[in-house]
Amino acid sequence: MIGVLLVSHSQLAHGMKTAVEFVAGEQKNFFSLGLEEAGVATYRAELEKLAASLPKEITQMIIVCDIPAGSPGTNAYDVLAQTDLEIEMLSGMNLAMLLDMVLMREGKEFYQLIEDGVKAGKASIDRMDFSEEDDDDNF
Image 1 (cartoon, one colour):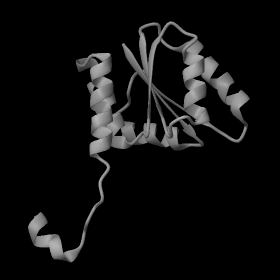
Image 2 (tube, rainbow, N blue to C red):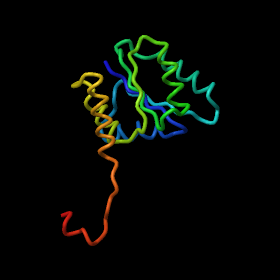
Image 3 (cartoon, helix red, strand yellow):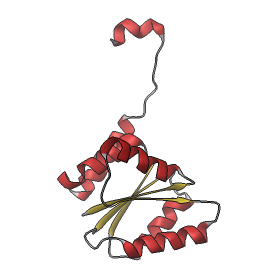
Image 4 (tube, rainbow, N blue to C red):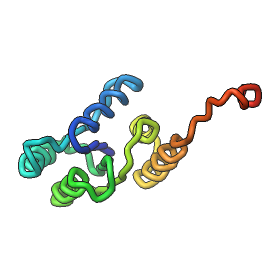
């Protein structure tokens, strides 16, 4: 079973989890944790507690972080790398990426799920042009 852990600075990961579950309903093996003002030591302790309490059915974990090489992601990877889980980490979380990965977990292999999630996330990033000149062309 594939688990998904969202990590971020402050409350972003929790908000993204809430948004995913607003759209897709409550999700099993889907977690969030934010690095708060209490600091990295407290955050690591929370990560260790989470790692120790993960269901045994989870054998693979995708960590999705807010920015590359940030403390939330690097610490999450460090803590989970000490478990028996197969781990991959992605950065630049967005709702399209998360919905794709969370909703398709049961139907895809681990690395295909990651690849498709990254594609969905990148495809959702675009400049929205609402200029009046193009109105007739867009509809």
